[in-house]
Image (cartoon, rainbow, N blue to C red):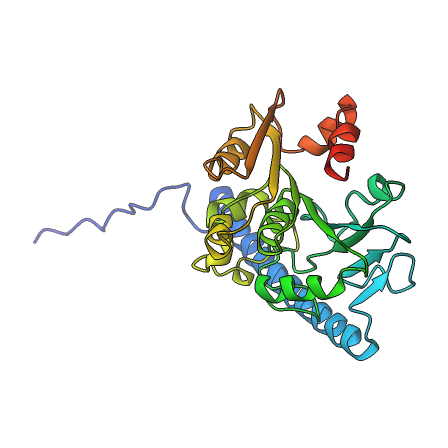
Amino acid sequence: MTTQDPPKDTTSSTDTPGTPARKAAQKDVDVDTVLRKQAAAIRQLQERLLSVQTMFLRFSDTGNVDTGDPMAELSPVEILRTPGADITVVACAGLLTHFGMPNKEFFRSFVDRGCNVVFLKDFRQCWYQRGLLSLSTNLSETVEVVQGLLPKGTRSVRTIGTSAGAFAALHLGIRMNADRVLAFAPQTRVLPGVFDRYASFDSRRHDIDFSSPDIDVRNSFAMNPDFAGRIDIHFGAKALPDVRQARAIEGYPQVHLHGHDFDKHGIAQHLRETGELDAVLGDFVS
């Protein structure tokens, strides 16, 4: 009688339980699980904070306040009123690169330029697709809200923004029949890849319906074919993603593209550093 050899152990020595390779792989899985749980917990905390902020704004009627008001940091709209001014600039804040409140962009630039300024903040950090906290739920409602907040005596409306704020400035400016729109490195169509490139820490993909017409600036042109204002778009001529976004709407006669010798996204800061921004803003409100 012959005896059978016992089956050979085909398990690699690097895969056996207790080996450094197996322990490292298990550690990677554990870390990934922990990170996913932490991300989910942060999202839940964000939703709760936004819900509390929304309720507070509604009950306290502080959804829009004058600049300098103690509630200004929590309000999605701040208004700088200049006596006798007939130009109102609607400035749309962009996305943050860290956790916190959206900043008031271009505030210092317009304080002494003799115009009113309405500052908009996208607390949900979703390209204004969910509207202004406590005041609106989408872009169309936001247009109505902003029109109702324009200071008395306003004869000319201008909109301005950078990046995601410029995306909002384009939509609002076209739909509000603004005389001028000034956009720095705007997104003009927010698709999933664009979201991934520019999203802030507070941005959440589920806040954006990528099938909505509001994710494409060209749809605002279609909604308001009589728009005759001037749109100036500044971008880095060597920043290819920004070039593609700007060129997506260059066929409209109202659009004027200004490419600069720059290869990054922060074109407004670059123009400030080169001393060109002051002239651009001065022309915008003249």
